[in-house]
Length: 137
Length: 275
Image (cartoon, rainbow over all chains, first blue to last red; front, side, top):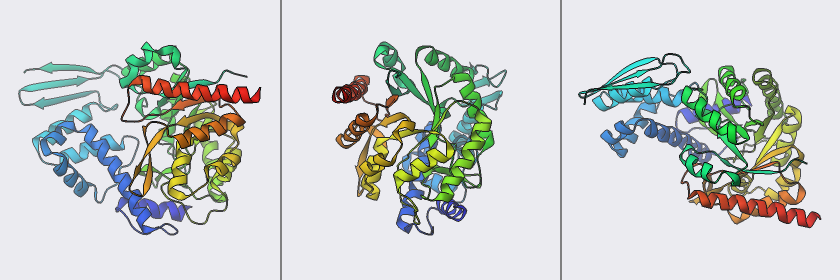
């Protein structure tokens, strides 16, 4: 059990590989399915970054980014979206990374600047309603 | 006998249509991950839904088959959600999605061995200690591949797990259909071995053929093969809850209601045969 789960986890992390008792083709298909789910989750979380880069460049840069890292923890998609958007080094990504982070349950306050518009996200307690204040045009 | 219920996987984008046709939907299944933060907005939605429908909670991240144990922080969040939503029961998949703290992001199949049964039983006991007394059920996921070294058939594995973990079952008939296509398993043989008296919920859905495989995408109408399996189940035992699951490519709401009506007609036919 442990050997199988360890080997499959490594294979998914590296986009394929050898897992005793399973055909390499099946392992590669499974790894690709997992990668596509992560990619779909990030597209949904980063619509403005996706629009700025376009689908092809978004996927290419995401796959390069994700090649040697695996998401961990219950907020894995949100954490990965923030890290990926920040890693792009482009304004759209940086702004959206702040916006995604601002919506995280652990955040109480975030300031997001997009051109002349400033958006303030406020949450007084973890479970209280998110208040959004927009300033500027 | 309690009246069997017919419900839907809840999608927020269908909320208006759901409430406009409320008498035709008996119950809702909520994806736990959509409510885990229990923010004020999520609590408002839970308040609304639980005031009008019996609920079940369907989780994706328990990873009950992880050989290195459960993520207790995740389970503590599930426990808070369940305490708030007060579902009839909650469920997750008979698979593993995490090992060594790494999230696979997909349901990986377990080997059909006694060692795997023991792992699930051990994890289920720990899960109950954290989450509490709300009944827990395990769903048969579609397997993307078979793990070598099986000591028992797929149906016998589900039965052994349910017995060892002393849990209920969610029977996804579309996943049985997908396994038949992809792995060559016999869904009727699996149904014959799965203890239907433990099944609290049946899932009906449709998938898609892609190249030489069948994807359990749950984004298409329920296919004839899956309806036939449902008929087989109803002849043996009417399940307490039957759900139509549509995860994406949502059709007009009326089309999903018609599938619920179709499910009800199988119940009626089974009762006539029994009478």
